Amino acid sequence: MTFRARKSLLPHAAAAAAALSLVLSGCGASPQEADGPVTLRFSWWGSDTRHKMTEKLIEAFEAENPDIKIKGEYGDWSGYWDKLATQVASQDAPDIIQMDAAYLGEYAGRGALLELKDVDLSKFDQPVADSGTVDGKQYAVTSGVNAMVVLANPALVSASGVALPDDKTWTWDDLDSTAAAITKASPEGVYGSGEVNSDAAANLWFRQHGKSLFTSDGKLGFDESDLAGWYEYQAKMRDSKAVPPASVITEDATASIDQQGLSTSRFAMNMYWSNQLGALSKASGQDLEIRRPPSIEGKASEARQFYKSSMFWSASSRTKHPAEAQKFIDFVTNNAKAGEIGLADRGIPANSDIRAAVTPKLTPADAKTAKFIDEISSELGDAVPVPPAGGSAAVQALTRYSLEVHFNRLSPQEAARKAVEEARSAIQ
Image (cartoon, rainbow, N blue to C red):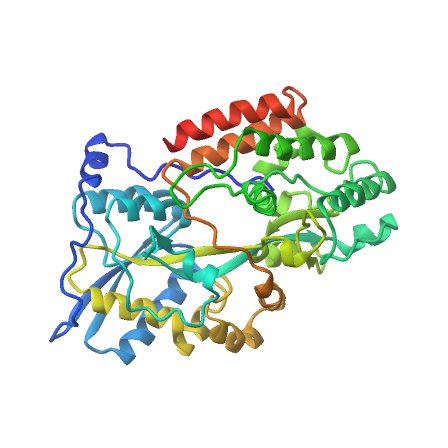
């Protein structure tokens, strides 16, 4: 699956962008709790279902903390970031902010976020806790986690007569050869795998080669030869017919999830985030299997797997009530009642105790995902660095040039040269 680049953090108005750049770190008040009642503003994005669930979270928190009132400010994804950037620029940011990895580095780097020293992360896997750090400081706390997985349609795999390798020992070459064999044994229009050219898949490939998508100091974590190797693998899957033609890949990337190849029984496998299992299983009418991505050496312990934060909790550096803001974040992160209310809406709970407690109450698909998340906890590599400003544009360049390889319009080497040039320019 190709993951679309998100729009720029900054609003269109240059004045607002300039104002945002003046926000200074450490502008919040004293960390001591206030003597009397306080009101905190809390912003988030999401569906109507999430809004109603979040209102229940707020009610539960206020019941345990009667001197703290939470005023919700919510909307959909499309307008959330322009509104937040304008609020921050005008020094009117919400106290508590639902944050995304694509924007965390930029907001933290501009001093707009509070360092969260008082939120308990003792029940987090260390890489998960570290995913909310920028320059060694905790500016965000993961609300829930996903992982990159291979989802397989058992009916299509069985019909092909091709057995899937053990997901603890399969390699990238195994993925290619298996998918190619399924394509060959299947009716026309059915392919062994969907596209394997997302930034998340590329990051796994880089990590397994000792590199990364980005570095902790905001640079590209790979060079031109590394990317050429990844594009050469794309060309290999193209030539073996393990994946569909480029025209089908392009169509699938822009299709709604219920119209994508895995949902419509045209792809026997595809790489997705684990939290998409439920929607894809429902759309396909199949109990899709969830499997580990491949590794270079055929060892799951060396696959450098990582948890992706579905989203984060952050707080404004200008909040007048930093202690209370952190108290709310700690509640939604570590409180059992909050876990029972939120379940997996913002990802599988990052707190291992909460995850274990809510798993029996999850939908079958979410319970399967939670089980998988637990199974791979001992196989995690280092935390993925927070993307730098311009990271979305850099990722977009990598994906776009991978399509040039699939269309056979550029060689892997030429595509890598152009992609790295654009990506470096984007993050500079």
